[in-house]
Length: 468
Ligand SMILES: Cc1cc2nc3c(=O)[nH]c(=O)nc-3n(C[C@H](O)[C@H](O)[C@H](O)COP(=O)(O)O)c2cc1C
Image (cartoon, rainbow, N blue to C red; front, side, top):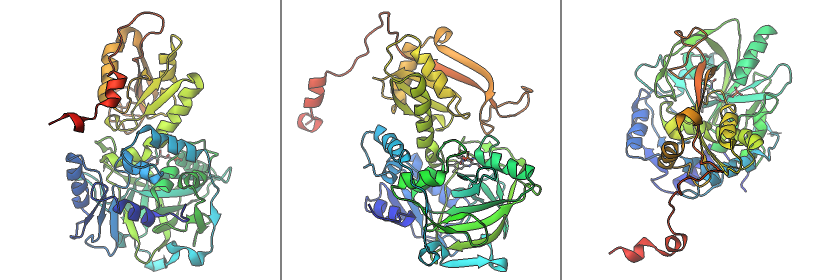
């Protein structure tokens, strides 16, 4: 395995696979909407390549987007060849996440992210090709940066992706979902009257980025999972102006601190829900103390209202649901968080059911895996949960709502789900009503047999040999 995988090693790997996976745009694009519309037009044609923009007007930096555009791209990031069995991608994620590596500190002289160091008056975020993604967005947002912070109680590093509006030459907003670990750490810094130091790095191997989104306990450092997913320790150096590790092979690292007593606002912002998330009056403010980067740094953007946003989180959520269901129903065979359900609000779970009630138990375990989840559909193991058609078929043929639908109102949900509500039902808030559909067949009473193609003829007949 090659050492020090990074964004560039991934791009060159994907580029060799041709236009299905990699497209370049050499015409200059405006940072307002144009790169997103190109991605969105490709999506209408069911095309999800990485898109490389060599010129973005107003910036000297080139830009890449749609790194997480498809399950095939996620698989490639984890060493799985495209076009195969979809479940292999989750398998690869789980195997690698179970073998984490602690980061290793390398010499600053060998850290490409230190080729250029900008501090003091040289700091100017507007030199980056930060994109204005959608018409009603409040401004330009960094959408694919990974924020590294440190838990002041345990000293454990925490990472995640958050939206960051450009607020000035040296200022970015940070919008934390109150349920996320970063928000907890931010609140602790406020209690302790300490600034929260932060590194926001942009551009790295997608395995590292997916690892930064992994959903462990607050005492798990995602830096270790990033190494696990890459199959090699994450190489880091010390920050130039903050006491935090900086990934040495990142494209860009923005250093700074948040003072919880000095906040800003952000939004509206086009979200993964495919709605504009409402404006927030109080979000964190990152005061930038340094920007370090490669000489020819590539800026990584992500269109937040495109399926790449949802897919970035998909594997960590699937894995979380798998673990949760496995505890109650060990015969769980597959888990999927479909793009059709925004990859966060819905999950399909397949089990080998042997005991009455296991369908509902699997659903209860799945819904409790993550607060964003709103809908769970549990099916039998012979239903292909990577095919929405088959899952909806099972739902409509195996599930009767009066006995198989469980409704849990007033549970913690997603504050960005437009139908979410607060303790006063007529006001917006972070709660949703959860739905668990048990679409498994009974185990102890007779039920119609589902039809499957005859095995022998299916494997023998090759269409090329039969069609004129
Ligand atoms: C592109 C992208 C943007 C995201 N934006 C936000 C955001 O603005 N705020 C937030 O709290 N979570 C956001 N998330 C989700 C978090 O990054 C993710 O749930 C992460 O695991 C949270 O980590 P934490 O619990 O350690 O803070 C985003 C995820 C992705 C992939």
